[in-house]
Image (cartoon, rainbow, N blue to C red; front, side, top):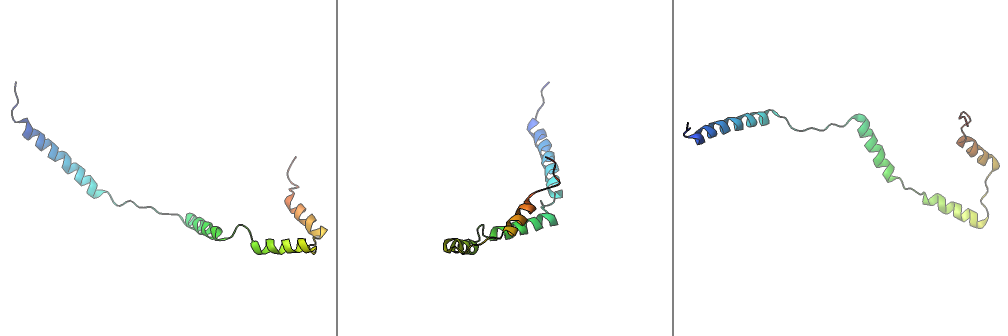
Length: 93
């Protein structure tokens, strides 16, 4: 058995497929990206953190001058307080 004019059948079949695809494309909305308030706050904090210099040069220079001149004096109480803050007494060893 021989089928004639198969090219016309294929055109009809293909045109039907294209219509389905085009209809689906029209129904799809735009891609959208929404950030949570927490993410926005985090980004703001990170931007502010980047603006802060890593080394406070004014403090470093002041301490260098005091050490060179011999006027740098640290109180034992201040050292003890810093050590006390860094120790976690609730932690089991």
